[in-house]
Every structure is written in C-alpha cells, then in structure tokens.
Length: 98
Image (cartoon, rainbow, N blue to C red; front, side):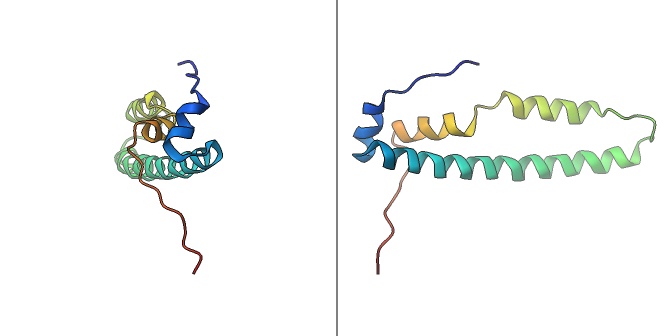
C-alpha cells in the first residue's frame, strides 16, 4: 500500500487554511484510531475467553492471527481522515471564546 499525495490546494478549499485542515484531519484520525482500538480490544477479549478454555500447549491462536490481519488491511486512520475531509464528510467548528 503506497502513499497517495494530496494537493494542499484541496485542503485550502475545505477550510480556507491548510494548517486548519491538517489540525481537523489529525483530530479525526485520533478519533478513528481510538474507535478501532476499542473495537479491536472488544473482539480480542472474546477470542481470549475462548482461548483460555483451550489447551495451554496451543500458543498461537489462529483466530487472533486472523483478527490482526483483518485490522492490518484497514486503511490508516490518517488516510481515512484526510479522505473524509476532502470529500466533506467531516463537520468541524471553532471553539467559542466565551
């Protein structure tokens, strides 16, 4: 999976400022990463419960390996966040200074 360059002019159109666009995308990437981490942990807990009931001799759990491969195939959070930003799928607002 190679890198896809993005024109900064695409980001300027979305927010009016490339630096603001990068800040918005980075915050969304953190959210995506946290969501995936929670999902991965929940699914891994289910596998661990099954694994505890199996024999101790079996060190490699094929279900755990398959789950890891599945999450490795997902697009990176930064890539997904930039894609959402460019296509207008992210709503953002400025903090009020009250």
